[in-house]
Image: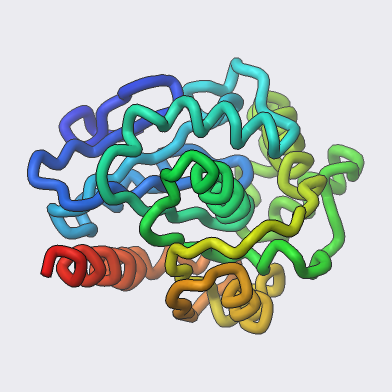
Length: 258
């Protein structure tokens, strides 16, 4: 978990790296099966004016004993309520893989309350109106599901082959993939917030063309950045990735301040 002086537990859903001189808050949504610790190193890499808030969903890490979400609508509604106290002032969302879908849907829900975020950074996830690029895995038998997790690249063979550990992890992992893979996009007016699509150049789950398709979901500015690597490219390019995000956020805030 996070060092206590870097990220504080604010509520069951929130892990926050306090920044007294913040200019913008960056809410981070992890991929399926992951939790807030995915962003443990980010506070030290982001500019000091960016305060990171990592979302911890039920069923993950220190909430592993809680029932995970299975439906997007409930997830969006619950997370939106949990984050409401922190949505004061400029904010942006970062989500990776399934977390990008949650970030996108939460942004659309918040828009209805006049609280649309200032920027979305959507990583390793095809635009939501595109057909699936790879087959679903949430309904596979346990052994096949474990193999699929390993092939995805987010879990080492040691973890996947640890029967006792996987007994604990499998229910929440399967629930997470059920949540993302049963999601169905519903057309709405485009967001006005800028979108930056991010990904790895060897990611079979989110080819570059599917990242570029996020352009159609905003009336604001669109940019894309591709890094070396596969679906979990972000584990190897943390400095470059956080620099890209931090620079975009502070550039925008400086422009608004003029």
